Length: 94
Length: 264
Image (cartoon, rainbow over all chains, first blue to last red):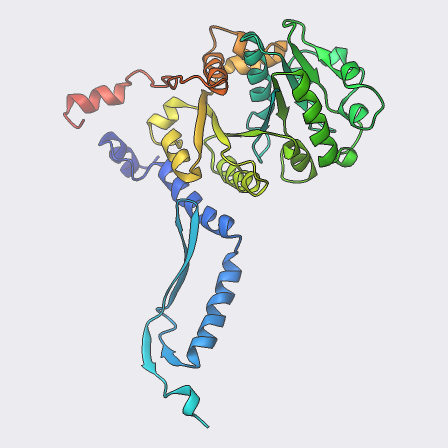
């Protein structure tokens, strides 16, 4: 136990306690377990999404976020994709 | 018509067999006619925990394959007239029994007994599928460790997929001191993560090892904390409303210091 941890515990703060670390890690791991999707697969999904969306608009790939979020026993795929520029109407092209 | 309850966990070593032995014995003490079924083929242990290892003649595979009649394979407990054990086979493999055979066996046991407690093997393969095949309800055992809780979550998903909905949770081996200093997940943390109903909490207790050494389930030991926990769980299984055990630890030096400086 480091000195900081010790002082925190003396003060009754729990933020550094290992159970909170366990809880947070579990929460994350279970989101993936329950959706039966691996981080690798999520990355691939992200790449595919970029490919498809890029046909229609320019997006900020670096700040794009694709995550699984969990609510009780439900899991949702939440994507936050900043749009930089719309492309011209696709159907009128060529 | 009796009821078949499967005790499962996913991860090994969290206390499935101990829980099965104590639930079964507890229900027998309460006057029910009970059979304990060990489905951990190849790694049987319920016989040892019950102290009945020297009486085995036939096993579950002999029954399902028609080598003997159910009655011949059942071992009567030393202490209770109304408690029986159907031991697992030690020399065969898990595929020696099929889910269909387990369903038939469960149906037969329900005719004879008030409760059949099925001790499930660790894992999610054939042995697990067999153990849950004929069950009416499921109990999931976990400890407050990440790996056990994670596996419990997987098991809950598989039970629900197999239409054994509303499994109940037993949190085993809680160490109140560690919970208190924030180094072990407590009941609320685990329930929050797994989102299922609680059947009971069992504190870590040396008397479990001692009772296993002797082959006498802790539920019979009125001085053991874990025994008290299992007695309460048994009553809940019978449908009674029983308060949770008080697992608070006495105030330590730290708390007194904190109070003194007015931090709490």
